Image 1 (cartoon, rainbow, N blue to C red):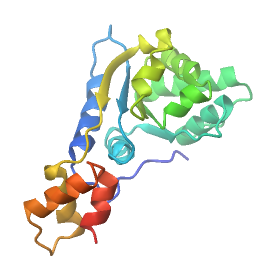
Image 2: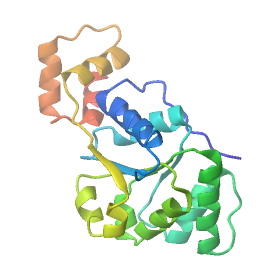
Image 3: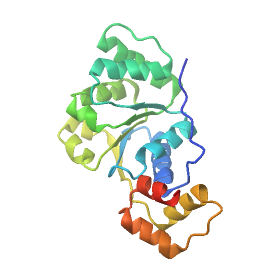
Image 4: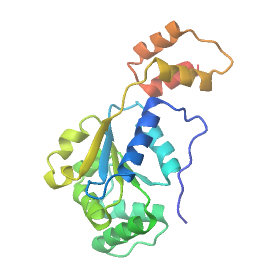
Length: 211
């Protein structure tokens, strides 16, 4: 059975949530002659994975979060598991299965923690999947993702856009306060102190406003 992504009830319309969803839509609606991969990157804690969960639900995307211990084969098996497809035996067959399903379903593929793709030699597997499907594929990673992917010229040339996740600002903090402290009135001055104290980290802002 295909595992659908569900949006947490506390997902707020923060600017990174909106930016990531807009990126997915932009790549989906690209002209036929344009590449179909893109990246969303930035510091840890700014809400990239939360934005991805929201977008995966909204756009009915397949979503995987790569782990440090994964191999190329396990990556493909996990993607196929999300698709509800029994994996074939060989890596080449699994890549073809994924590409075929992306082509048939017209659904995007979101790959979180994409930095591990570089570290574990899995970048070309994603490129093979893209070349076999020309589907919308969005990578999520840390600040250095654009620089590390630049080493892979054939992969880098297939990127339509690079969007940097922004740190939490006052507007984001206000939204978080309304969700986690709905019965408490917090002044803008205090919220701004929280933003400054956590240096724009959305995760830390959430923790502090919910106390």
